[in-house]
Amino acid sequence: QKEVEQNSGPLSVPEGAIASLNCTYSDRVSQSFFWYRQYSGKSPELIMSIYSNGDKEDGRFTAQLNKASQYVSLLIRDSQPSDSATYLCAPGTSGRRALTFGSGTRLQVQP
Amino acid sequence: DAGVIQSPRHEVTEMGQEVTLRCKPISGHDYLFWYRQTMMRGLELLIYFNNNVPIDDSGMPEDRFSAKMPNASFSTLKIQPSEPRDSAVYFCASSLSGALNEKLFFGSGTQLSVL
Image (tube, rainbow over all chains, first blue to last red; front, top):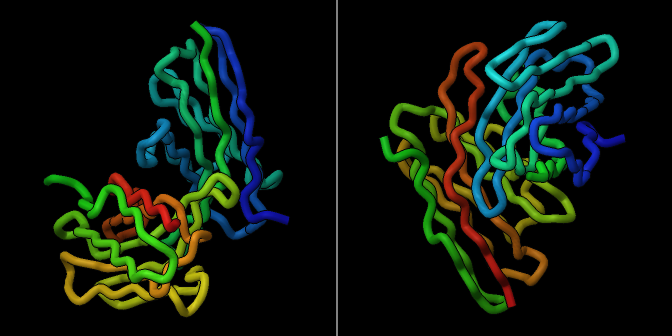
């Protein structure tokens, strides 16, 4: 089993719709969770972090965490063509600074 | 700050040649990471340093790969000899220490092509 699993996509949604990106992880001691966005040909950039069970909202982005199910998701409301990118999930573990990234989900927002 | 600076941006070399990738982390950051990204394997951690000391090099593929961090502002990743399967984008990233301070700042990457 991979440490971090994501559907590679592409996930295609129309402009204005909600995009839902999912991630499961295998390490039960993971305590922090990160979503990075990577545009084609660019480097990853952090867009959301979440540490507690439940939802965390930041603008059009909502991260959802369920540690019991080892599941984290990212919702993008009112999707825009500029949101088209690959979204990488990365759980973090206390005591290990380095992040293990999922393979990413490619999102396409159709105008 | 200029961010994490990597050089070169692109490197094309022939199989068997030595390749050296360079990284300058953000000033004050005490963690430095080398990642490799390919379509097949995604973004893989190769090695990371804390205060210039290698902490985990378990991701280094084989002895052909080596990394150094002689001071807080410079790191190199060397491949000798290079092979076509080493072709990938190599990213350097840095971060600050501290609880809940795990944001990684990535450089622009080096696109390596080994022919």
